[in-house]
Image 1 (cartoon, rainbow, N blue to C red):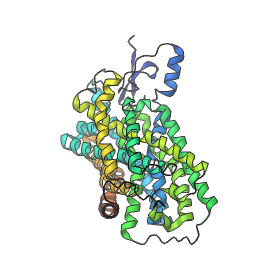
Image 2: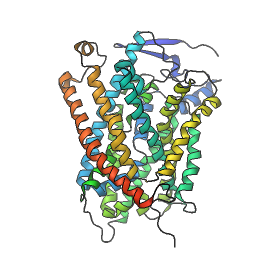
Image 3: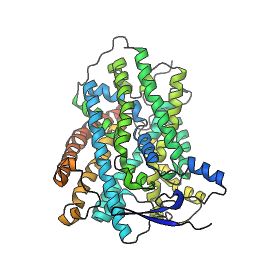
Image 4: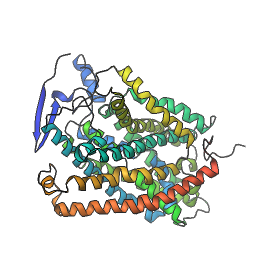
Length: 479
């Protein structure tokens, strides 16, 4: 294979190594993990559908990853919170999530810049969040970040499998949900063949189209259906339900556990700063209308129907939405699982090897097994989102990034040499520290504290009611 010219691009204090034409080895800046394509046409097709690294690719990845199966549980959250609180929490946590995603991007660029000044080459290595923490703050921060990040992504993948089984049941109930979980676990295991986030260009684009269709289907279908007979809107009624609903929204806008991997797949990661905010604004155009319309139409009935599809009559439009969501959940499973694949590759020593696709896929397969098992043990579609949100998302993508940013730039020397300085409108470093303290304190008390209590109580109630390994969670009785 002909060697490719490497061009060094200096952007401020940030040194970026970019391969000419945007192609390269898996894991580097613009790295894709494949051999050079033979022929201009095949290369063009490959770049169009496979080799993504632009700011647009990152936006599609963030948008597609942020709103997946949770779109179907937000009406359930509104029935716990009430209309006003549901809308307020979506706006509030959407902005808060965008802020902490920005902090993660700042820390990534800081770490990357320091390492590249030391002549470290990342062209065959994917940087991950725990490595950023290790490089900037030491091993204790790395261990904490690794635990929360991996555990969250593990259960995030579990939730996608649970959602697949829950959705397919509404168009084919010949098999119970547990059996469908087995089937979709095997299907989702094929994501081991996708090398990195650089290769999700086509999937991210299609995934966002699918969730856009589903969101507007829910909105239009609810409006056309009108208010159900005898509908009531009594939320909020109980603190347990209220904070359970709030933590599901916290989970909704906590999809940036894969921010570092998405940034690393970009040709110019320093352009990421506002991408997550732009993605969040688009996602709000999907989540607010669909959740509001469904709650308006069905009200308190949603308390016993955590999947919004279950209350809508079966039509070709609903079946299309179910199928599209199933495909999208496969994509989101890949998003959540790919960082786990990287961690496992590094643990067993094959991450930096120029190995074959089949060998790398075989090495990744053990990661899927515990996900498959946990999806069968805890099939509680809806309640599990809130539990993961309060106990894991709260630390992974809110508290740790805010605290880490304050720790990294605690000294005057670190602030003076920072690659990315605070926005002027925020009031400099003092304003940034104040905002970070607020984020960390709010999520610790409201998200982890009250949310953890409420979601755990609700989760235990599901276990007591349905039991572990339940065959068909919330399935209507057969006649």
